[in-house]
Figure 1 (cartoon, rainbow, N blue to C red):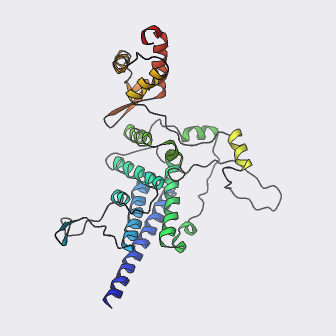
Figure 2 (figure 1 turned 60 degrees about the horizontal axis):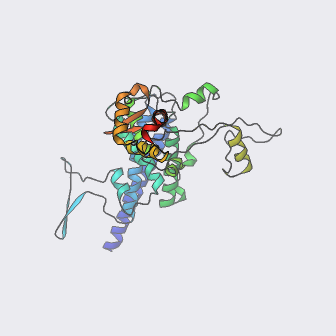
Figure 3 (figure 1 turned 90 degrees about the horizontal axis):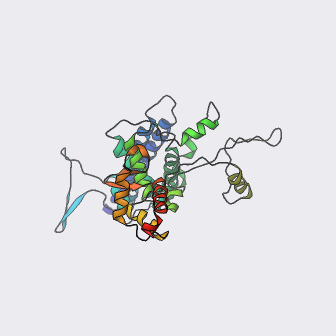
Length: 327
């Protein structure tokens, strides 16, 4: 009898967490789609992180895994509590770090990105990130819908509550160019994005679970009376998709490759400039004041400086000019 009551209580708490998780996710999307809200990205990130936290709490509750901070003292557990006496539950990042986390790597990368971005925006006001990061926000929503159905049943899906957001204008060529522009974005946000993306492999960065990118093309019905959809999904390996990729420029987020100083030296040595070493590289960037942010040769992420492809080309030009010295 006691076991049955415990099972019912676990189910009751789990159901409540799932409900709160769905409500938070819906609220995050509704806020982001509200044209009257300016501070939408920041609010979306905070609330969607809460939604994911509740979702994982519900999962761990379901499998009876302790998700409160505690210490083992002999045969008993000592639970960490706040100043007011409440239990301290795992935050989202701790939930993702758990060995039995049900979340796949690419989805976890997407969430870790949002967590890091949330830390950045907690202390400073941001701007111009809605369009630039929308692919990652979209991936986060699709991932959430996938996992809430996978972990708690198809009836928990939220897609039936959300309609396609309608637009009042088409995307012009000028608008498409500005969608990926970073000018005007706060420097601390840009540095965080470059630093995070620089740690991902190419496959991880291009995963639709990390950032969901789509191509929009104006399309009309082939005949009168035929139903027409604003967005039509086609398989990536279909003949139509292959033709589109050859004909059109796809709008998507891209981050410039970044190189450590040792990478720059290694590239030059592989190209035959065997005497170009770290000392020569240091002297070169100091002489050219290459770390001046206005020159665009690289970026500092946390305490580490990374070089862009433009600096590789500059170093290559230098080595070719003084070929006899370095070969």
